[in-house]
Image (cartoon, one colour):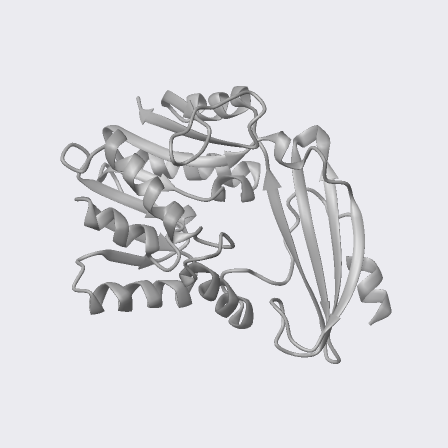
Length: 277
């Protein structure tokens, strides 16, 4: 087991995957759902007071009377989807987590909300000219590899109607400007990554030439060793503009966050509104 741990506990290759998945792991997905539905935490969906601010701004920017059909990618437990429905959109949600989608469907059914939810990896979606507006909220774009970011933009472009709008947020390099590489460990009887007694080896790696960063967690129990690499690519305005232009989008505007605040050059986050060309 020591040999296996030593092999894993090295700087991973850029975008190297692990053996655990946040959205599908039986134990981790429970914790993720709890974060989604907790109205007082920003750990997954965001605080619900922030959700309402974001939805209100998007509803003002692109009202449902003009942009009727909305697709919320990475919709989680459907918190945003329900709020979007309440301000006049015809809403579809999509998420890779079966546990979150099951919760979202049950919640909408109990409230008699006609929202469509798909349990699916959005990299495999095959909609064509179906939506007026697509949202990707809470920095999801940056967790993807370079190849998959290009693929997702292609899928979104195809799914949008002519003149349709894409709204999403990302981190800028300033998000990690003061964070240094480190390694640490901790023991827990039960925790976010495992319900069993385990040792967790935590590492943070910087890939500054690529503006990319990795949080690695190695989980060691009496029976196995598993690990997860959580990647985050950060973007300058120029890089994001180039990515969108290559995919055929025209940028309407940049904002400081998903609630529409003004953008300044040293912002840690960035929201972009882009239109299908």
